[in-house]
Image (cartoon, rainbow, N blue to C red):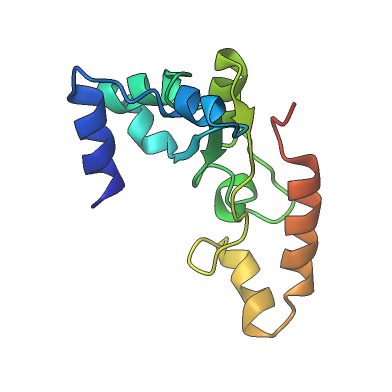
Length: 137
């Protein structure tokens, strides 16, 4: 089932599963979800992502991908990258990183590194970015 449909069904239902609370009661640290910036303008989706009884942990799905953070070499833009970390911080949710380089979400200038087998630049970026994980607290 497509995650948008599932989240829409959960958000529109009068019943709350309280998945994070149930996970903690079962001895787990958290129950979480990947969150994509584009869906946060959808009220039911946003309400569900904000619900700490449902999700005690969030992952930025696409907002921190390389193509978004460094669209031009050396030109870093964090506006989109900060959306999910800010939401997690506001709600007291745990923040975890997602895959930061993805074959179909590379900046145009970064694709050359892969085409010529010079993945070390991208790998260095991933390590550096994940180590700092913008918004981690």
